[in-house]
Amino acid sequence: MSVSVNGGCLCGALRYTSTPYNEKAANYCHCRLCQKANGAPVVVFTWVPKENFKFAKGKPQRYATSDKGERLFCGTCGTQVGFETKGPVVGVTVPTLDNPEDFAPQQHIFVSSKQPWFKDNDGLPHLKEGPDSESI
Ligand SMILES: [Zn+2]
Ligand SMILES: [Zn+2]
Image (cartoon, rainbow, N blue to C red; front, side, top):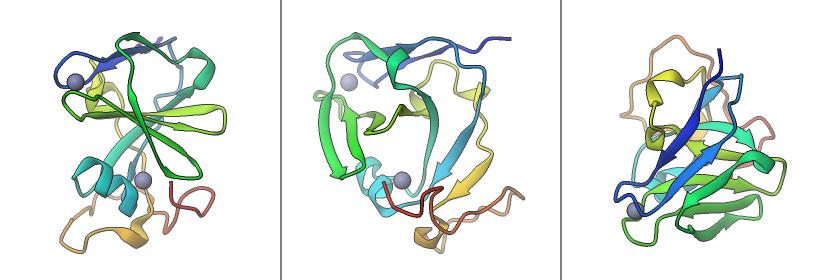
């Protein structure tokens, strides 16, 4: 079954699309940069091939939060819709998808920065850092 990766920001100025991705992999990211960029204790990302990801409406503002890549967000409403890495993938923030329910997170990453009051005893794997040990 193919899964669509379509979504947009809160105000509707930005709409993005990616070709269907067969892997619904998603993760919770607890890193401080995600916390600050989203004003939230944790952010859920799914990853799509950069070559397939495009904006169908509007152009995002960009902000490099590290040398790993840039946050993509709406200049009007501020919603972060993605994180464009310098590698071959774009992280899409799952709550901005049209069908976020299809992308249940499978692990927690950067739990070394997790807020102590955030309870996540959900039985999922917890990585102290990210897959490559560096905060994005
Ligand atoms: Zn917007
Ligand atoms: Zn993060």
